[in-house]
Image (tube, rainbow, N blue to C red; front, side, top):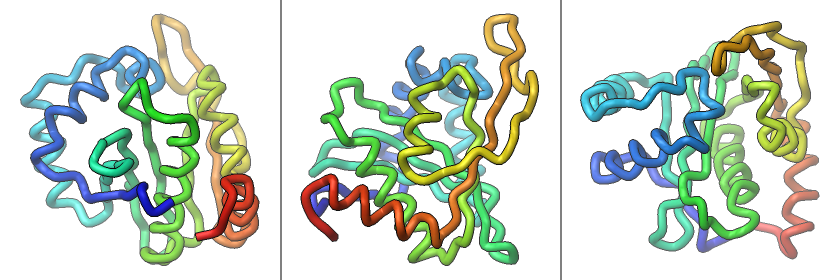
Length: 181
């Protein structure tokens, strides 16, 4: 896992992140799937820099950026936050998402002291639903017809992972990767 890192988003990566975010394969599973302008992107970045309840990190394999993970609505009182992520590089090596998930969840649970991490997954995003379950997330209900995609209303599945559950799942994931960190 040593060759994989998470680094705070910096201005130098903004162009690449916009390219990833505007790709059809990433946009298709976002709540807001319009093409983002450079102006909107800069405004988002400025807001991010002034918001202590958000953290956005770039996932690297060596010097190659592969994806983005963000944590938002970070609530220290309740030790809870939400997360979202995507692999930006289409040619990312197999297992990239799992490694990004492990590093990101470790950071939030171990370094930031979170007790619960929440997610909202569009029901038609079967890859993300499976990925969340693999990481130990459990469904907590259903938001019926919560988002509109291509004229159709689609359900969203709220999911969550508690720190204690993560400790158990993490060990299994690392054993399957051939070693422990």
